[in-house]
Length: 511
Ligand code: MSP
Image (cartoon, rainbow, N blue to C red; front, top):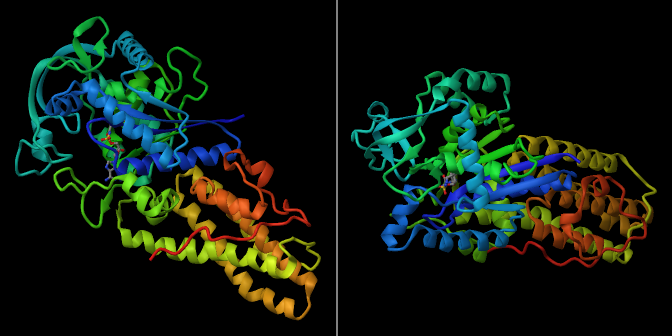
């Protein structure tokens, strides 16, 4: 069985989950579900990032210990994911013993390769981004104020302390070669070019330890230092794969899904760390865009961060999952608005898909007592529908390999629209009136069978709604997680004589 490994970033525990965190996790979930359905042995990993100065400061503000804050926030993530139908196989906390072993081990391997040395760091640091900056970088970033982070615009602090350094610069050429030789290593294309330009600009050695706070994993053999939180956090991807205690059949990871803001860490620091440690590089890093909410940037100060649990209450899990992956091409920025969600839901799910299922099953009940009969009168339009379904299956597969969720959904919706036209063109009501029973049976069969295969492709996106739709078609409660494309994806598997359930609305209109 082929392995497939997909990861999300691990989320900082200084703040509660919002729609941005849900976005990556839903996208990763869709890939995980799709690949399970395609027969792969899947590892889908998510988790939380508990260490570092930012979390320590957030806990300090609340007057509690960092671990207490972590315990509180980790529960929010752990309880949110099942509500969003997230099917992760593991959940890494960076305070776990297995993770500390992994981080300690990778540090030792990098050190053994001669890529770590002790020095003195004297420059600037952005705590919210957990990022080092030089004065020149900050000046070049164009901020009028030279004390602000080029990425987030918040004040940076002066850091002056003994530090271990990673010889990042030594891996520059190897990394460039790797990126050039593996066009799929970084996606989308625009991000790949951005990384290439950055690396070509030269890599400076990276400070990888701190001494002025203690909330982290100690440097092996030097307790006065804690390991830089990004070195700690990135290693979670190995921890979840079993490193260093077990065999790691899932490594290298098939795709790290991340947001565009943390691309440099994943596409530069992480591969260089792995090169130094002699560990294979992930196959792909894919950076998605950012969401605004009703046209505005989400921020703590505005208090407008969109909380997934509130949205679930308002719209339901599957509508959110569908909207997030359909509205914006994965990789681009987008805006979340209530109006846009309702609009998409009403047109694509309620009108097009829900309606097609409802009218198809209703007609089957009205004209044939809910029972499918033999397809003895095939015509060109039937063969057209079958061909469209089969090419959709191929297109969806290709899109999923490129994380092009919006494209996959567009292909699926294309077949739904074709199905609605097929109904109009073949007018089952007229066939019934004219007593053309064989032709009528053929049309109804093609409708129901094409819907079954459309819904099967939608399972990874909307597992709950698809379970409802398939249970109407199959006339039994189904465990959608057990469905496999090889067993269930072929045309013609619905048998003549099969009775479908009576339809009930799956996507009631939103007002
Ligand atoms: N802890 C680090 C990641 C370490 S991974 C080894 C971190 N955590 S985070 O909680 O701040 O952010 C996690 C993810 O949320 C990032 O991928 C980021 O892009 C994403 N998002 C945060 N706000 C977002 C939006 N408004 N829209 C989309 N994604 C956003 O960074």
